[in-house]
Amino acid sequence: TLQNPSWLHPPQISDREVCTIFLFDNEEYDCRTPEDWLALGNAEGSPDRKPIPGKALLPTDDEITPVNLELNYSWHLVGILDYCTEKCQYLVEKVHQTDKKGSPDINSFIAGSKYWIPRIRLLFCAEDPRVFVERVGFALRYRKETEALIFYHFSVDCMPISRKTPSLNTDSLQSIKRRALSAPGLNLETCVAGLENEVRLDYDRTMNRLIFDKVVMSCPEDLSHITLPQKDPEYVPSQGKIFCIMHLLLHLFSSPCKLGQS
Image 1: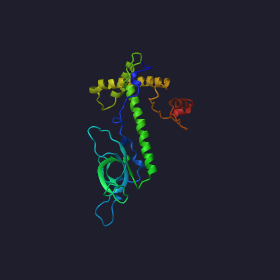
Image 2: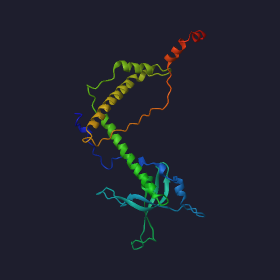
Image 3: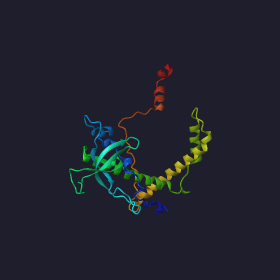
Image 4: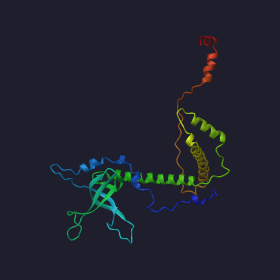
């Protein structure tokens, strides 16, 4: 039933199935281009480029055993080596601060494993960490909103079409077909049937969406895991002009002189 349907319950999604956060990264927060970041490692008189210092979110253990495939991540001191324009990823290398005996030593740096990572998991030492925190927060909020919209539209698509729901009448469909096929140079006879099904499906989905929104708003506590999409506010213009042909006709016929001149 619509009051307590099973498909309205929140889906059980594992951490591996959620949307990857780097898809929601906002590059407007970056103060430099990848080329400019790598240029910081160039030194005058040296053909080699030095690693750019930074911190990256990397797996704590470099080796994965077949018994435990779960990865634990933590922030590591790294050196940025390269950038891939196709994948939009940076090549970083772990840097361990240890001496020859393995004890912590701030004056000794030992290179470790290398990783290709997206920008959202990399903090350059030359950037403002507060801006980086805002960047990560924006990506997290954007991902949360997107996942809520995906779940919302998926729920609407899974709704059965009720017989009591008004369907698209034949006159409206014929009017749509007549207007679409009347366009000059447009040949749609070969795909009219498919387009009719798409129009009917979109109409039924719109009806289901109205019912779905009403059910969610009537049961806010039971359906708190569902977020309805925010509607864009409609603004009434302060000034406007409407072309009225009847007003022009009345003005024209009200004066015989003007009518004779026309």
